[in-house]
Image 1: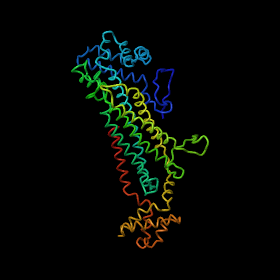
Image 2: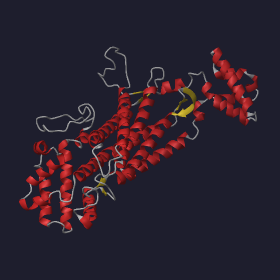
Image 3: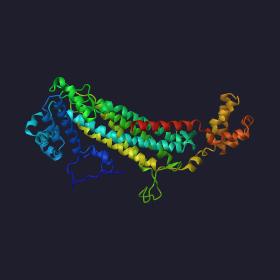
Image 4: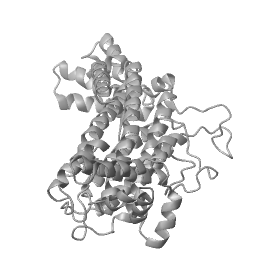
Length: 466
């Protein structure tokens, strides 16, 4: 996996992200949240706004082109903005001043015309989220396809289905992957659905009225939105409603919870006493500094750990929704943390899970062996079914199946042998029928059809949205 490394020789003014970006985060995702990148987003907004204003005659065409030229010049740096901010104590004002410095004199009065700070801050947040989702969504699709492939591969492999941590019945091992694959496909749909609500462009000024641009404010915003690939705000205060950010954070956390669900199952199945799966253990890897034989599910544990941190940001994003009047700053500082953190952490989790699934070792021998840990009592459900079909009242059949099972457990004998010896059962069911009942491959139900349907659905979703 690609990792982000600070390069102090080439860029001394990188933003300090609120996570260990040397350990967590891909190069492409971390790059979206560098300080210079954030400035570039905001400069793009300034340029798009000026050109849009010039297109409808609000400002001279030459001025619009000049402001856009300066915004794209690449000469407005973090270093210069920091110098100006040291005097003004206002980061957006410093950016506007730095942009003005690079414009010709006749254009300078029109820089940032009709805009307020949060037009830049919020719209640039939307641009970051747009680019973050463009990174995340294809990776979710990639993971969904891998999971669907695993589902199909293992659809005919009987395994223990567990509820409450106890052996309950027989499951197709592939059905585990099918459940995960389908939910990943739903996340692709959810991501697509939230875009129109989350990726908002706002250029309506100080209190959301578009006061300086007057009756043309909505037209300017419409044009800017189109240029930036965003959706225009239909109504706002000084800021975009924070319900939009809360939905973004919630969706990332929801996806993270699904990843954690998968990770927890892998961790459980890798337990020594279960041993049905195992994360890839590369040559030279060390599982423990003290115990040479350990092979720990560290990648899945990492996903679980990061998921906890991701979940915690949901509460913060919800608490940012209430504001005083048309806005206050109670959301501002923490959003500098939660938007980068959630995006970077989820991207890390998806990358890690893709690595886990691609290289996951499936131990078919252990899966088969575990079917008989209870000495055949996992087949009790199917024995009950056979007796009912013979016309025996359900609760009489239930009590007989249960009684024989408990006696066999206490004596430590195979359930099939106990069934054969008990006349209340053996008088009703033939030896051939007993063998059929105690054959795991006969009890996969509609698993094959379910898995095939899921595989097709996942492929269709990926084709549609990715």
